[in-house]
Amino acid sequence: MRIICGSLLVAIGYAAGVIHAQERPRAFIGAKLVPISQAEIPSGTLIVHRGKIVAIGPKDDVAIPDDAEQIDASDKVIMPGLVDTHSHVGGGWGGDRSGAIQPDCRIIDSINVRDAGLQKAQAGGLTTLNVMPGSGHLLSGQTVYIKLKDGRKIEDLAIRDEAGNMLGGMKMANGTNSRGDSPFPGTRAKAAAMVRSEFLKAEEYREKQEHADPDKRPERNLALEGLGEVLDGKRVVHFHTHRHDDIFTAIRLSKEFNFKVVLHHLSEGERVADEIARAGVPCSIILVDSPGGKLEAQNLMFDTGAALEKAGVLTAFHTDDPITDSRLFLRMAALGVRGGMSRAKALEALTLAPAKMIGLDHRIGSLDVGKDADFIVLTRDPLSAYSKVQLTYVEGKKVFDRSNPKDRLYAVGGYGAGIDHVMIMCCEGHDHDGGREEGQQ
Image (cartoon, rainbow, N blue to C red):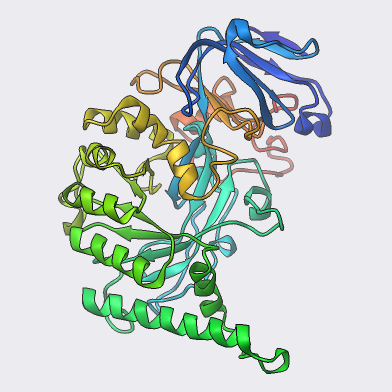
């Protein structure tokens, strides 16, 4: 093992199984810590072990285990890994053009986990994503929550509940994206009517399934089963909506059928912030430096986050990658602050707030003892235009290191940065993990 203090370059010559388990505690000493859940610590110590945070506090108050690997991080900033509630990395598609409502489609069947976009997201400090189908349908399918580990298949990345089931939500949309020629709705009113009809069918189907004799249950319907999980609260609806009237329609539907909802985008959210707050609905917004692209997004403003914060709405940011680049996700908080958000809420909107929206705040979103060791090491303050993500860790394992030329390529771009992550390609000079040399885990 060799440790180069200051540069945080750590090469550990352990066997792969030992590396993954992180048998030895790792202590990052002297960094400015931004825990999100508590006040910032100007010079602190963070200790992680076996994928979890085991200690955090001021430098002089944290006892470092005798066997810990000690890393001098005195010129760095450490904060939780970033959580994106709305991403399309992996090139996945949900429903097709055969119908406007397809809740049986599962994005897990369509994601390419070797897509270079996942490595670019790691380079941007993202550690957890809600990967979704698009917004061209009223219901385009089931989303999946993933950790940005280096995996060979979606099962390696998917976050699971205690029973082993993959976790995710349901994608819905209204407004112009989901309108079109039949079988798609031609008006906003017809769009809402179609959604209501489908939810009524799901309620009836669920009722019949629950009360039917075991030998006489209705034939299985995967679409209605998917909506049943929404009705049962097992899946949060992630609702694409822009215009103020569409926002009200999304809220209205969630109240009629009593489903959990997170509103996404909200180009006109600033206009109806108080009404959103009274409804108790969380919002995941996007801020772009060149608004436009569609009529319903023409009123997108930098002060949307500030208006929602003032109203008391739980607010997160998202990338909608590739609409905005995951490598620049930190900039979203800076734009929010420029628009009037507080520093604390802007940083929370990248971490703990989105973790709450996907029901994973008990595991991720802040630097707290017992939570997953998902964190990033920055060269400067997270709101600085000059700050760079130097290291990204997921459950204690390093998945991005800017000092590694192959990782740096994903961060800065250039030839090869858009090529799919290569796991195994013999005779072409690629190492087996697609870029990280042995001992740099």
